[in-house]
Amino acid sequence: MSLRTRLCALLGIEHPIVQSGMGGVAGPELVAEVCGAGGLGILAGLNVPAGDLRKAIRRVRELTDRPFGVNLWLHSGLRPPIDPATIPEATLAQAQGVLNQFRTRLGVRTAVERPPRGPDLVSEAFEVILEERPAIFSSALGFDPTMIKRCHERGIKAMTMATTVEDARAMAAAGADVIVAQGGEAGGHRSVDGKPVSPDTTSVSTMVLVPQVAEAVRVPVVAAGGIADGRGLVAALALGATGILLGTRFVATRESMAAEIYKKRVLESDSTATTLTDTISGLWARALRNRFTEEYRQSGAPVLPPHIQRVAAGDVFQASLKNQDPDYYPMMTGQSTGLIHDLPAAAEVVETIVREAQAILDRLCRGDLS
Ligand SMILES: Cc1cc2nc3c(=O)[nH]c(=O)nc-3n(C[C@H](O)[C@H](O)[C@H](O)COP(=O)(O)O)c2cc1C
Image (tube, rainbow, N blue to C red; front, side):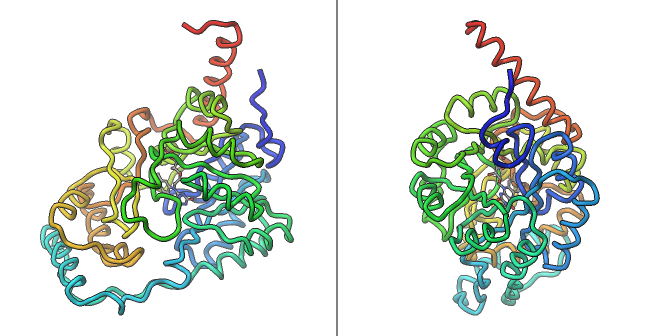
């Protein structure tokens, strides 16, 4: 039984399996490995300066001649980055206060000053994408109709990621070629612009979101969130998706750029180990619960504005990594961590999912529902 779907035909890939362009995780080696196995690899563009992004795109091309994508976050808090001067003194003092407790434990110099304003990278990175013309421009945490139009003028397909039916409709109206429906189980940030007061409105489960998005739009829908094996692929197809996008599963692969302490935690953790937190970046994201996420929350200290929180906590994260101490390190991870127990090559992930899904479909077609 063939697993070739409308998504495969549209993107020129063999299997309907997409590897997320995860910031800090998805480099050229991971992307090329996934593409080589017939899936779609997406290169991370988050916080990557234009020159480095161009080099990474060219490196993917040295490693594979298959279609691949490049991902950017389009969050309004990055375009341009929010000015730290807008943070009230008392908010800054309370946030630095709790970060200083962590710094002291990790042997890092304490800080009271305002974090620097992040660099404005999105527009330049997008121009590089237009010039280099990968097959797909993948965007998250916002979408931009003008960017979609400019991609189409260059023959690049646009893949956008939504957490609500309403956003999916707006993306389809803006010309998106593929819409990723990101369910609440997903690891990493909720793909929405701005910051909802609570993460609840952007955390509808994959099982519930995908059929509604598939009904609402005419373009191919890709299911994301909680999928790590062939069972997840078959379930997603049954819900009306034409493919799956995986993040957490690919964190725990040999080619992923994730730190070893982080990969180890993904392998060891069960599905209750994650939390939706804004303490890491200032935006809602699903990550492994650790001393950083829990003690920050319990302190009652305010979280700094989107992205500035990540810059402010950067020295804590770096020290945690240097000390090989996962207690203060940000580990974006979805609930599918409980399904992941090995560290294969990324190509094996694609091959195993295809093999498992085909076996399940064969069994179901024989009417074997036991
Ligand atoms: C470590 C990590 C980093 C991520 N970074 C990005 C990113 O930079 N851009 C993006 O579009 N999505 C990113 N995501 C979210 C994924 O695109 C996707 O929605 C999610 O991983 C799917 O759920 P799963 O983790 O259960 O597979 C990230 C996810 C993880 C786990």
